Every structure is written in C-alpha cells, then in structure tokens.
Image 1 (cartoon, helix red, strand yellow):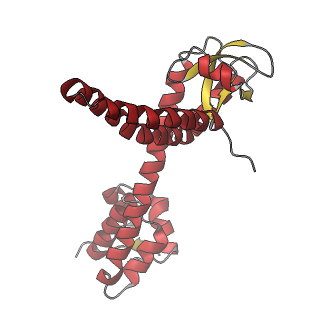
Image 2 (cartoon, rainbow, N blue to C red):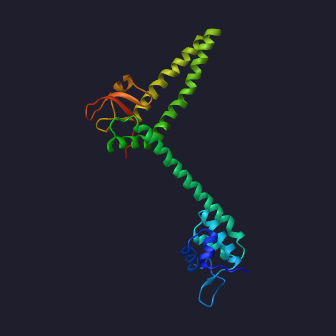
Image 3 (cartoon, rainbow, N blue to C red):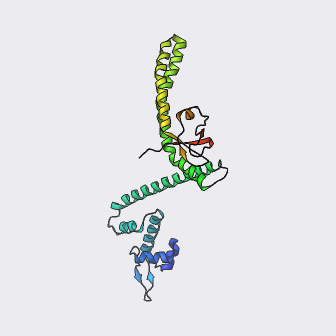
Length: 241
C-alpha cells in the first residue's frame, strides 16, 4: 500500500503543507504512521479522507462541522442536516450580495445625473434608495384603491354611450370626488421632498405640492429651509416617534 509524506499529500490535494499540518493538529487528518525519522506518513485511506475534507471545505463547511461529521460512526445521520444548513447560509449570503450589487448599480446609475459628486449628493441618493420601499408601498395603496374607481369610470362611460345609463356616470362622480380628496390628503400626508441644494427633507404646502410641475419622482417646489426653487426629489415622509 502506498504511503505519502505531508508534502506529497498536500500536492495531490492542491493545498499547502501548512494546511495538512493544521488538520493534523486539529485531529481531523491524523497520519497513519510515523517513520523512524519521525516523518508523518499518510495512507491511501488518509488521502481519500483528505480529498473529502477539501471537497467539503470548498462547499464552505466550517472545520468544526467537518470534524463532527467525520467523527460520527454513521455520518449519514448528520450530513444531510449540515448540508441543508450550509445551503441555507449560502443562499442568504447570495441574497445579501445580490442586494448589495443592486444598490451599487442603482448608485452608479443615479450618480450619472449628478453634476458635481460630493458626500452630500451620495447621502441624498442613499436616503432615497433606503426610502424607496416606503414610497412604493404608499403608491401601491393609491394604485390599488384607484383601480376600482377607474374601472367604474370606464364602465359608466361605455354604458352611457351604448345604453344611455347616465345615472351610472353620476354614481361614479359621487364616488370619485370623495376618493380623490381622500387619496390626495393621503398622498400629501405620506410624502416629503429632498432639496438638492441644502439636502434638507421638507414638506411644502398642500396647494404648492398639488399644482407644482412634476415628474414621476420629482416636483418643482420651494425649499422651506434654504429657499431654493427647483425640482426636488420625492421621498416617503418619516413617521413621527
């Protein structure tokens, strides 16, 4: 039967000699015998064991888990659990890194629209990115409540034209007007604006906000803090403690 020195087994498994020695001190890979000169000699079974250890390490399993697995008389009783835990941990890590990647891409994209990049401008972008979920939630509420009203409007118009049911359009108006007032108040109460000049989050008057020129994400307003008049970024209003 073949015998392998520390250097040979390290080379065959693609690791360093120090790694093999470390596994020895941890009791994970103990040499089959010692030569007369005190050199560690590993058997073919040790080589197979080392390859299994390297494979499990490549999967990201910690040494403590591998040691536990190899010490079991029936490793099948724990290997499934350990692999399941490792899979869960890797998926969480992938999810976290994917989220970081998306934030990085969004930051790079938003910085293209910034004339002079500064810590303040990066802070503004970071604030709006962290605030997006709240803003989307608020807009989703408005959209979901508006769908039935819109459907009723189109049904009322079609039936008025085809069947002369004008009263259905009146019913829509009776519903739509109060809905418009309520949703406008809801929108105003849940939004604020980020001034690109002084980087302050402020709330304009309802009248100014309602009649201001706007894009899907900005409105042309006057900052209540520095007086700057221009397009300000829409953000979700922070809840009061």
